Image (tube, rainbow, N blue to C red; front, side):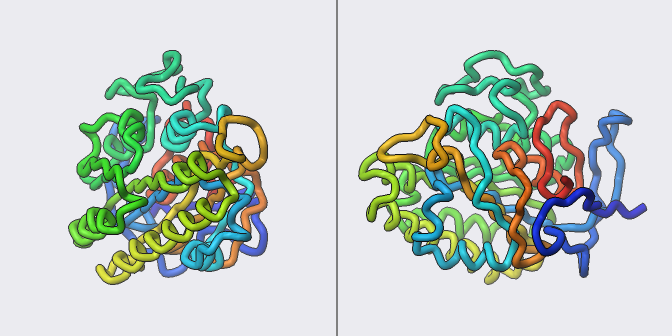
Length: 318
């Protein structure tokens, strides 16, 4: 029986985010929580999902920013500039919330620490709060998972054993040559059936702390990162993957002056952009989006159900 992604109670402008026209079909094994066993179903949707996170990228910057690649993705996909980071608006609590589909009260990260500040309400068989990395590994054992990150704290948030390609790239934003790690990686997965890739850029956060948010140096860095994302997209196109790919772009927090962590709009309001296979173009998402809605959205793209403990909901299934 074909399993199709259903859209209900959508609160978006113009059209549904996800178009089911001309969907590719793929038989996969998924984990059914009710049956506590694997079942084989046919899903529609993308085969490759790229989650790209720009550390310290506040929504306030987009009207002024020279970011033609990202603005083209916004026009060609669906987006919101009013998505919200959790409090405090710092990195670990928000990257954790993005991966864990939940707020800090559930997963335990309230500071930039290696381990949660307090015990999470539940842990999985890997010893972590259930997250998109462990969930995909459990539900689709054959999926190829990669994490390529500039800030080393990212690697504290998931077990390395579930990631096929786990690589820190500490100079990714400042050294264009380091981008070859990502483009070579894309070539290596071009023949695979099902992949999930997380890419983290830290340059905007560095510029915000060093020179200040909403400064020429900050906007220069955003322009640089936009060009990098353009190269990543072009590599996906060159490898013949674009017809089966979805990009999600977002951030952990914004900033104000040379800091972040507070509850201002500049610090908490972040972009959410989804673009690619079966995503209806020109859609402005008017419903509320929280950073912890990103992991459930990735689940929806892969046609799987999130764990019951998650707080977030897919933006495709309001």
